[in-house]
Amino acid sequence: MIRLVKTIPEHELFFLLNKTNDFNFKRIDDICIKGEYFDHQFSRYQAYDRYSKNCYSFISNKSILSIEKKIQNQLFSDESNIKFLLNLHQDVDYILTNSDMFADFSLILLPENFVFQIQEYSLSSEEELYQLIQYYE
Image (cartoon, rainbow, N blue to C red; front, side, top):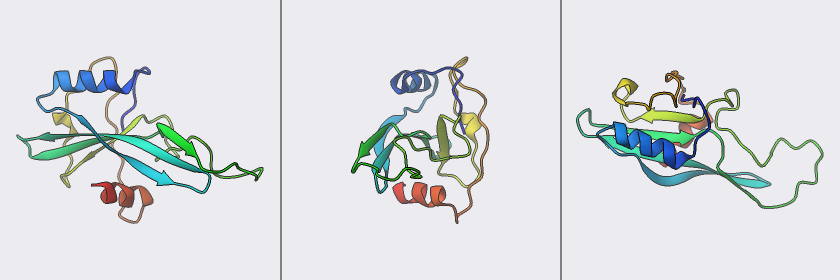
């Protein structure tokens, strides 16, 4: 889990990441979650480190785009125009994944004064987010 120290645009964050690392993060297809009232999209950036032979992915925790499909007519609907992949961690900006089973995120040089230290978060194969990430990889 990655939390930003201050709010900065995505393009600026990934420009700084690419500037400080040997591998370059590129925007890839968004993760899309379809709901009854909204379709939500979450941005994804991916880079391959040829030295460690790992593929790293940054996934936005908060939806970057919500498309309203129909108007809500229920007073207490559990669906809103903003969605988080980690509902219990809404302060997390990005989820960082690794293609290796034993993740070593210390290889990624994070821009100073922009990002807090990476916090580990384990997903089990039964969780919906784990299956969603596997589907998009």
